Image 1 (tube, each protein chain N blue to C red):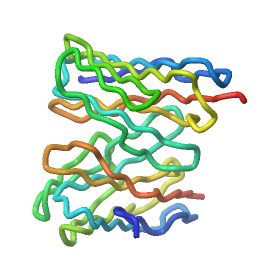
Image 2 (image 1 turned 180 degrees about the horizontal axis):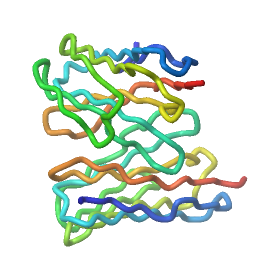
Image 3 (image 1 turned 180 degrees about the vertical axis):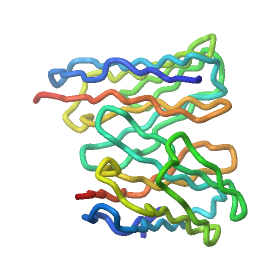
Length: 108
Length: 112
């Protein structure tokens, strides 16, 4: 069945370092969404990508949707302690599937 | 007030008890969802509803039931709680395209 794999599962970075999480789908997606969940919190919608090859930026965050619409990435430049949390990709298609998330730890 | 409100926030119950988790939303959306979150497994869909008369099973519906009382209200019931239903439960709503889910703050359920 349709699967959305997200890597890495965990990432420890020093404050100021960059961070990237990758999302791969077993099937072509109609769209991909990204969410952030702070420790003890609930997922919060960050962005949605719909077009093949689409790139969107939100301040230090850069989101990409692959040309084949089967993969996506979220890149954070110069991480800050406020970036800690779990980042989920959500693949939209016949079904909406959540990736397992990448948990980001930032050391000050 | 929050767009999606879940009650209770925390609950400890005994094995075999019936429990209901409630969710209400003020977004005016037709689509509502119940998810379960376990460490390392992300969010898994239990049930979803696209309008008041529409109820659909998700990937892990066994042991759960739902009721859509109104456009704004969607409740989740555990008919006979068991310990492996201990988890964090989220209610969510989205627009008709399924874009930009808004989640509630979650209910942490412990079954002992």
